[in-house]
Image 1 (tube, rainbow, N blue to C red):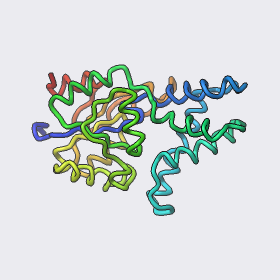
Image 2 (image 1 turned 90 degrees about the vertical axis):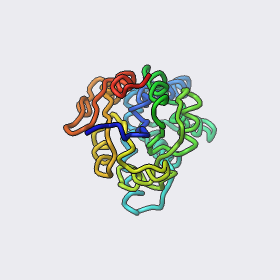
Image 3 (image 1 turned 45 degrees about the vertical axis):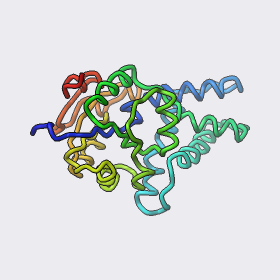
Image 4 (image 1 turned 180 degrees about the vertical axis):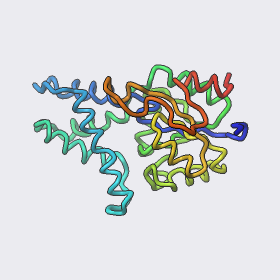
Length: 238
């Protein structure tokens, strides 16, 4: 099917646009190593991230009201610190470490690729991150979004259908005029089920050297790209 009708690209952010694993490992080491902690820093990042989906599932299931990701991240951080036997951090230090998610480093192709894509399409975040997190990340990393959308705006965490449908509605577009862009096949499949077009962008190092999933696009994706530069080329962006 032609992609000529696509007017907006919506983006997963954690893992697709930014390298959360290396960034969180680095931030944890910078704060905790001077305090005498010698941890497996990538394992610390993985453990914190492992609590991400279970925390959001409490909201998706209705077990708790909508709670923004900054709050969930802080709750998860406190649990991970206990697991790694880290104690004695001040409130300011805890807040600073929690806000590491606001300072994630983009993949090397991200800013250039997004800038090219922006010349032809509206670019919107379609992230589970809350507004302040996404805005601060964009300012820190130079990400050229047109609009910040996602869970807090839509009041729904992906992959709930309303997360995608409300985003399209907020853009004043039909779902088929939006293309979900992500490095995660499950996210793209959920978006496709809500009528979105789909672009898979491979991030084989997102989960570290032993990553075994999302190494390539699942069948049925509209576009499979190796980077945002490759995606811009395939979409005919200047």
